[in-house]
Amino acid sequence: MLFFSIRFLLALLVALESVSVGRAQVPLSNPADTLHKYEEPRPGTAPPARAWYQKKLVRASAVPLLLIGGGIASLGDHTPVGSYAVRRQLQEHFPNFHTRVDDYLQYVPYLELGATTLFGIESRDDRLNTLLVIAKSELLMTVAVTAVKYSTRVLRPDESAHNSFPSGHTAQAFLAASIVHAELRGKSQWYGVGAYTVAAGVGTLRMLNNKHWESDVLAGAGFGILSAHLAYLSHRNRWGRKPGEFCRQWQMSPTWQPGGGAGLSVSWQPR
Image (tube, rainbow, N blue to C red; front, side, top):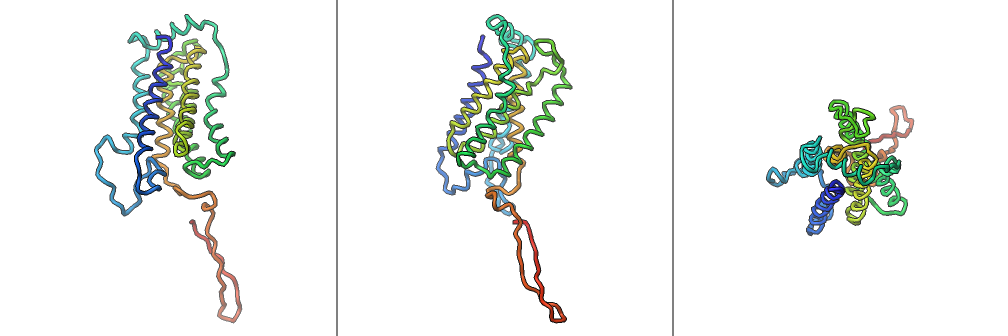
């Protein structure tokens, strides 16, 4: 029971990655079909009929809602593996544990994404679109986590504040890991595996530091993943464009005035 949280998070990680790997192994007739997991069809095209569990929103929210539900279910000491029980085990085996590594580790997946860019590894979307998705994800996560924190007012394990549920550090780490997974899984699944492993480590350290309950970590992971998925699901700006294609399209043409004068007309429009 000591490492229940670690095993549970990693088991969900494996399940999530297995689904993605299985999806990636399906041959597609059109390479463009692999570009955007949650993108809606273009106007004028009729999407194929799908069962409710195959809907994009259902697929995007299934795993994070499971995590959030698991966090709610483990609040307090309702079960043998509830938050209080796990905390007692951690305190018994690591009574004096303290580190601030988790304050920085939560952003490491973004460093992974930046490093791949520096080494010339192309992500799924261009840089501008990736930044827009990150900004939207961060906004969704911050609003959701802050609202829940100050509405539930759960006391932290170290009794330092009433804003324990959910864990903001864990939400941030899993949000960044989800971005890395979405952008680089076309190159290798190991980018996502590494990012999610780091995120699981952040959640574990938050419990070892006595800053969060197990329920906070599970729900935080769910909020982080859900925020990233919803950002991708709702993003509609220039899918598939290269950075250079975001500029305006300029056109110049000569003009003639009624009095015989010549000039130059300049016009532009979005590409």
